[in-house]
Amino acid sequence: MHRLSRDAARGRGGPAPSFAILDANEQPGGAWQHYWDTLELFSPAAYSSLPGYRMPAWASPGNPSAGHVVSYLRTYEERYALPVHRPVTVVAVEDLPDGRYRTLTDQGAWISRVVVNATGSWRRPFVPTMPGAEKFTGSQLHTTGYRSRKSFTGHRVVVVGGGNSGAQIAADLLPAAASVTWVTRRPPRYLPDEVDGRALFQLATGHVHALERGDFTGGGVGSLGDIVAIPPVRQARDAGHLEAQPMFSGFTPTGVQWADGRQQETDAVIWCTGFRPDLGHVRPLGLDMNGAAPVTAGDLPTRSRDRAGLFFLGYGDWCGPASATLIGVGAPARETATAAARHAASAI
Image (tube, rainbow, N blue to C red; front, side, top):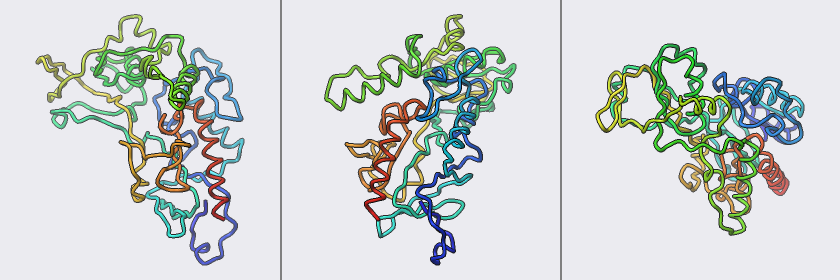
């Protein structure tokens, strides 16, 4: 990938590196540096590593913290001297007549034969529209805005979401908030207590491979449940403090209300309602979409079906089994790098 500077445009640019990584963050660590302070991984460090370098052991009780992951990712980047440019925010990716791409950023333009999109979803949180939300006088925030339970000391909090974030944040708030009401659209589904990130990755991989063979499958990870019972969640659940309520139907000026007319005074609502792929920058390419995801090739789920040299990595199972996890991203990343290098070489 080559940055298009004024000198380069005039033919005086130096030799271009084989690839460059553009990161909108100011520091290494990706989305992990933005999580709440008590977040921990689903798995021990030994089963949470990227290819080539194991995550250092975690000496404290439980699994590694988000801060430990950030430190690991920083070291990983330094260990392999990865050519990361930051902070650089990508605005748009455009086609060029000769088959290359022009990536427009807030720091100038880059010209390349290949573009690998690995922007994740952290910058595109999803919050459902609810009646009366605009009149609610309390605070509303998404998972992306939650940092510490200290900010909610003495508050009456409603946590929305039946996945891992909802369960973890509800459990995290219990020691500080005056009350915590956890609401979900369906009864919470906990995975067996012995299931961790390693087991999830193995199950997801087996599910995808079974589908590729045309074998019957029971649904992969989703068939087991939605919530990994990490120790804080398990303790709160077993103590009877994580009894989920059905989803409320709307807001009142001072709280929430249910369809049966019941109302509850509330100081804050935390939406743990997920994300969408952060792919607004590829909109100029006019790609065919399958819902929120671009259509990818059958032989390589990270490769765009519509554009040669365009790849998507790390957004979820649609671009590789468990590819949005540390332990699961290695295989699809390796396949993507191989295919990207072949495409770049064939275009020379």
